Each structure stands twice: as C-alpha cells, then as structure tokens.
Length: 534
Image: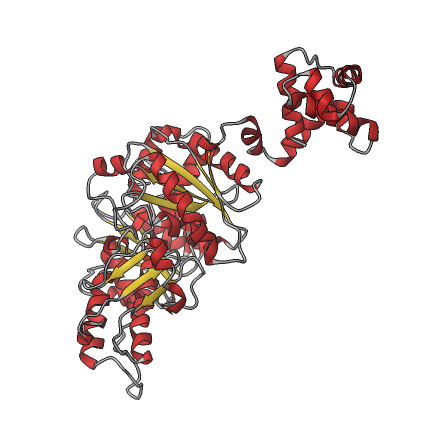
C-alpha cells in the first residue's frame, strides 16, 4: 500500500496538505501513533505516523514543529497524518516544516479515527484469503473460505473464526493453543483445558505459523475422531496465521506508548502528569496497584518479548504492557485486577499487548489465575516450567517486584524487579524470583551485581580474600564454621576436630587480619555477608 492510496479512500476523507508525487508513491510498511515531541527512536522506516498534535501549542516556537518533523525524516517515516481535533486544524508551521524536510503531510478530520486508518493499512497489507491463484487446490469449501476471509477483514475474534472454520464438519471439538498451553480459542463443543493439559496436546498439534518464535507459536489441535484432510487443516491454520500477524501489527502500534511508560519508570524522578498520560496512552489505570516484572533470556529482543507476553497472558484478569529497557532486558508493567476494574471498560486492549485474549480462555477451568499480588507471583512461578519447555536453547530468568501503590512508585518497583532478576540469575536453574522471596541474608545478597559482591568480599575480608594462600584458606574455613555454629567455640572445635585453644587462636588471627571483633553481632554479620559474597 502507498501513501497516495490513503487519499483515494473516501471512507477516510483525508486531505493532502503537502506532498510531492515521489513522496506520495512511497510504500507504507506500518503505522505508529504518537504524541511524543521527539518520536524518532520509536519509529521504523516506511511507517506512516499518526499524531493528534497534543505535543504542540500555539505558544510554541517554530523549532518545536521542526524538531518533530526532523525526527520523522531521520527515522525514514513515509508520511505524517495529523489530526484536526486538538487544534481545529493543522498548524501552518507544521506544514512548512514538512515542506522543508520532505515529509508528506495529510490532515485527518475529526470524524475519522486513527483506528480506522490503522485497520485500513493492515487489512490491505494482509490481503484477502480469497485472492489466491485460480489454479490453487483447496480443501475448504469455497463458501467457507469466503466467509473466513470476510470475518478476518471484519476483525472477528479467534473463537468465531475457529467455530466457522469447522462448522461444515459438524463443529467438532477444536482448539487453538499457545506455546505454553493457553487456550486462545475453542469451539463450543470443546471442553475447557488447563494449561498443563493443553501443553500435553501440543506434540500432536499443527503449528499455525512456523516462522514464529518458540514462545509466540500457536497450534491448531483437533482431538476428535473426525476425519479431516490434512490440506484442510493447513488452510485453517493459515487463517490463524493471518489473524496472528494482524494482531502483532496492531501490537506494534501500541509499542511506542509502552516504551515511553517504561522509560519514565526507569527515570529516578518522573513528574506525575507524564506518568499519568503514559499510563492512559497504554490503556492502564492511573491508580495502582501495579507490579513490575523484568525478564532476560539471552535470546534476541523479539523472542524475549514473546516469552514475557506469553506468560503474562495467562493472567486473564490483569492488563499489562511490555517494552525493552534501555539498560537491557524486557520489562512489563502489570495492573492489578482491582485497579483494572476501577479503570473502566474503555482501556484499550491493543495497548495491553494481547493477541486475541478477549476471545480466549485463561487456560484454567477454575477461573483465571492471579487475582491478588501473591496470586500473580504464584501463578507465574507455576507457569515457568512450561515457559522453559518452549525452547531448550534459551534460559528464561525473571524478576518481579512487590506491588507499587501509585505511579510514582513504578521506579522503585522496577529497581526491585531488576534486583530480583539478578538473584534469579544466580540460581542453578532458570526461574522467576520475586523480591518478596529475598527473606534471608544469602537471598538478599544474591541480588547484588557480581562486581559489587566481589568488591564487598575483598574489602570486608582484607588479606583473607586471597584464596591462593593456604593459611588464609584454613582461617576462612574456621571462620565459616565458627559463624555457622553461632559463635560456639566447643561446637566449632568438634566440627573441625581441633582443640578449643586452636579455634581461639585462629579466630584471633581472623580478627587481626580483618580488623573485626567477632564478639560483636554487627561484625559477625559483616563477615558472614563477605563469605556469602565469595
């Protein structure tokens, strides 16, 4: 689809404010909606940019519009579609800036929604299932193919697509399942499956989109005894591949607000107004509680994001957004179930990063998991083995914060989640660690970065930190045993098969070399922490 194609659509009623023929002939690769003043880092080449111009006011200098358009030009944007609703018209300074930087500018009237433009672009890009070569061999009846094509174009949910796809077979039990056993869709005759039960069916199910990542894969499962030609199953799977790709494109539109929210959460001091605006743009409630989760897999960015979103989609009563962090790793802000109810039903599902969850089961016949903060952590930990099983080549580690009561607490929650992630990475097996799990000194220290642990150990132990010295290794063994036995001289001597006087001598040497007094509790704790940091 090209920029000029948008102008030909009477339903959109767009007006060209400036744009030379070569610019209007540019191909559109996608759509991004943004009201950031400098959105360049969130754009991809070839995208059209939708903006309500909230970032501009009549008092702004010409440089403000120039910076915005320059960012679009630098990112390779195909065109700017500016909404008229905020200011009643598109400012002339913006027209001039687009002319200077060579960016086609189209105005969007009040009665045309950005959603309508987005859907138009992506539906045109997906194409129509009925547009196949006439010589192609089909197994699905022609009327079924036509109906599925229309349903896709109309934005039908996965359950409707699946039910209509197998209706001519008598609507047998049929499922679309995710890589972790989440039920994305099922026919009315199919019983609810738990995530664990559904996961066991994946080995015999048909992959919907072979090019998807291991965590983003969908499966078509027909457990009944109905004889279905393999070619027909592949055609039905292709319908869901089309649906999935469309959902991913809609998600991409919502990524800019999510990145902005996480960027504000990373900042130590963020004003209340930008945080509230970012939460609203993401479709999240402006009141807590919130939970922050950070994941690292060692895989590429898109695969890591798929893993995080997939596990969070099991929390059917919670809304969330995910984005890549500037400091590394992928993070999610999760709104509590109670907060979401208070937010109302107008929060935007696309911003929540859910591909069709509105038509999906939670994967748990007894109801969706994770109604409380503690329930969220328990549910996610229970899902971790399924997540690990998706791809043996990656190791998913996760850290999750304590509940953040207000938007202002998101920065602290992100710090907690990162700390818990560091602790998870020190474990032998990939796992999800909650900051509330760090209830012992050893667990608390495990969340420190390795270089901080090493520095503390060297400083606290002094000369004893030199493990190459046999005498120092002997003293460290005595110190460790002494502290393990709560400072008991007799039990330490018994454990090491030494005379009590020898233990006294060695502990005296430890005190001399470290400058610590082991009769004091705080000094004992210092040295115990130093030993745990080795």
